[in-house]
Length: 244
Image 1: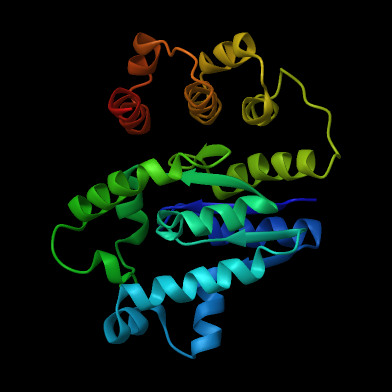
Image 2 (image 1 turned 90 degrees about the vertical axis):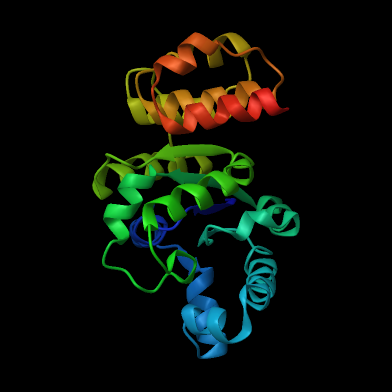
């Protein structure tokens, strides 16, 4: 089985979901940030303040290269990991990349009492979150599937991710009647017509994954439909499509 790699911005649920999945499937869970802290004996905030972000990114790249060599793991990587193409290549070699997305306001609510995030230090945290999330968004689009966690419970997030993991393990037959199954289909479907049907799905995770897949396949997108989604990530996707 390929590794399931959970990527995305801080506060989107990578560690919580990853640990729950690992326990359910008796798989190893690797949190790259936690591994860095174990190896260095330092907190991430201390590494940033004493050595700088560049030093942290080098450690991150080293850990990713090490843990992505073998299959059968669940790996969580920090929000900035995909900024380096070498990390994306290493993770994709034996892994399926699932990007977790949450809106800036939801992330702010989740992190309002968290002072361990060095990149969010200072005033106007919401603006910093939105700016950093938008900057990283093009790298997140390298993922294979997207789960919008803003208004899902952890239980529901795990339910979606478990269905994907079951499929990667060859243990499930997908149905059009189940949202989680349509979402998995949107990540693996190759037919343009079927992807366009999934683009119309009311579930944001299904429709956004289908939209990104169509864009990567150089298929035309229905701009009016994307606009009607009224979701910041569809807006940003339209900006990326226009830019490219």
